[in-house]
Image (cartoon, rainbow, N blue to C red; front, top):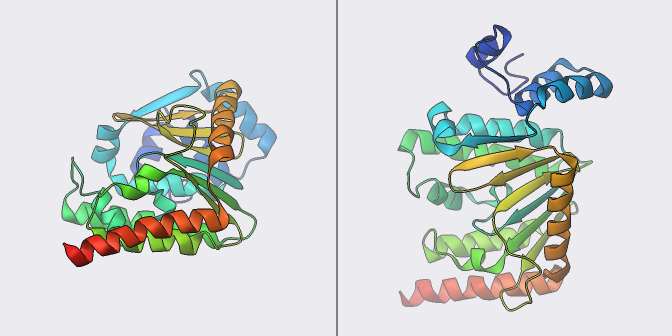
Length: 254
């Protein structure tokens, strides 16, 4: 049961014995693992949702094991038919190369090498969902993210090549929010929309999860506003390839 719910047996035992209060996310994962009907799940989730918005500090996730958190996100993505993700900080995890992902987890506070390798592997495993039938993915990435040197120019060039390649997948849509366009809103934080039921947003100190319909609606509207000014198709590829070529020239001259 713990494996199906993407949590440790110890955590599940503490929940069963009342020593740990489960989050709404925990309840959802356990009920999905049990295979209850949507009606029954709705009743349990309504009971668990005493506070609609949950926050989990990154320091706690690090202490728990960041690769376990990747497995939790993987389980949530497995029940998501339509994923929409807005990123103003990094290349989305589902689109990262191994080298870029390793560089991300090397940023302060850097993970120890064994932990980093395990976490990168867990993140890369999540990417298999991009090739599954019956799902759709819409990514919005701010242009400045493509220019930020979180790793060597050559690694960035490879990462941008991967973006262009993945954009050709039939169920993957990647939009670039241009720097020179009129901004429809402030990109205050990155977030992912899982169908119309769940939002996961990230800040410097914590990850927030909300299922409140009004909050979810706010994020849907925000995503749509940025989507309307984003570059897609040939324009997206041209913009990404131009930045990639800048990195390649930097490598050759540096």
